[in-house]
Image (cartoon, rainbow, N blue to C red; front, side):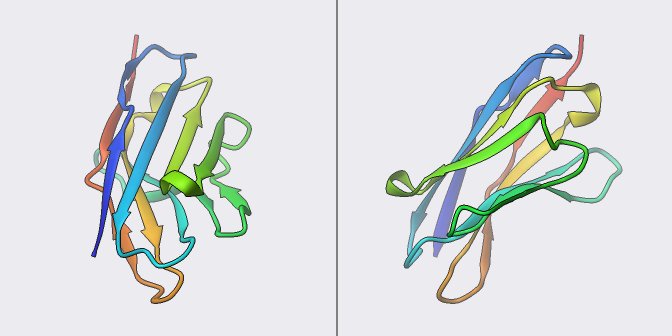
Length: 117
């Protein structure tokens, strides 16, 4: 089993920044792929950013150039630096980890990000 704990969400004004963190623990067995999805009210969950075990990254078009995903393998932690936030970025953000050995995916419980003046 793998446990994920997110932190760093909150209320921020448009144009502001937040940094999300997600710490993974448990039976991971290697360097997993990790990333972030988000879900806004009334919308489907969408990929925000992902990072592979080889540190290749991908981003949703709507966040490219504003958000940066990074990881610290020694701490089993993935980060999402979010700059120039917009009201459309308001959502619950979920981190995931995909174990390299089994290919299964685990999810965190989510952290709320609200962008409002």
